[in-house]
Length: 400
Image 1 (tube, helix red, strand yellow):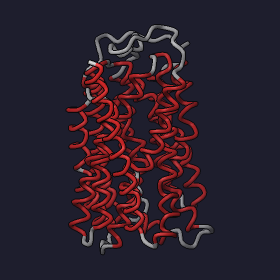
Image 2 (image 1 turned 90 degrees about the vertical axis):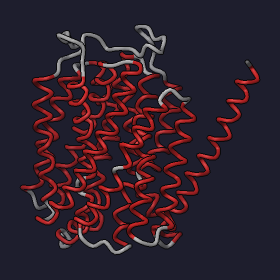
Image 3 (image 1 turned 90 degrees about the horizontal axis):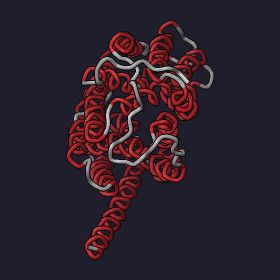
């Protein structure tokens, strides 16, 4: 077991913000290349199997994260989470920037595969350290701030990537250099926590077993929710294109405007963090489902941007909601392992989501009709949660 060094003073805003910036890096790894997808297809069109391999530039890091996250979590529970996070952030910067020197699809995919492995360690250790540093309402507040700040950064990254696409497919790759100051900040401005903190709202004691039953339920719900969650981020650029947006900069600007809804969603989560978990999921599915419905029915660019904004409000609620739930049920000694399992199902949902859309497109005939189907599914889930919430409330009233 790695001996830890006591922090000279309790963790504060500086440590929280550094961990938040670190947690944004894997998201950046996925989103950065989305605005330049048309350029990627054109540039690599002469290479073998380009129609299959080009989309994998975006999806392969998520596959790495899904496969490696449980292992990363197990390692994070046994050794120094801070040192693992620092090493993973350095590897992310190195292999994230490597494709600017490559022009082979296979080599680029290999570099992004390794970057995805680093992503898995970043996500599990960064989120576990937030759980180590903070407890109770303080933890919920920082998770909400993480979602809001992270979404603003992600929105700016998409916007910048769209403009950098004017310099070619590799222009947005230079965004991965942002990992370097995070790497240095983690080295010089963080320390190991003197103890792995428990949530004061729970009754965990040392030596608690891993909560398999609860994690099974959380994993299934995470998989379903992630498949819904990624519909808007992964498909909205195609909707914009179908409605007449041509350049990567236009798509980047439109996506950035819609992304402003995420910090609003995070703020809403902060206001409802003490509600029952079923009510929180009801709010997510209702708001996101409404936004997706409007996207599916939109007939012009302005309408679809407004609809995407509504969907992003819902998305801003989901991540802190899920992370807060997972941290609350996990004993401290199993926190990284549990976070690794959660990230596996979250990014597995990310991988399955576009596959499901492609399969549905073959039946529906076009993307907006496919999104209409998923919007109806989301709203039906919200309706079921509403009925379940009403029944629970009435049962509590009767019991009292």
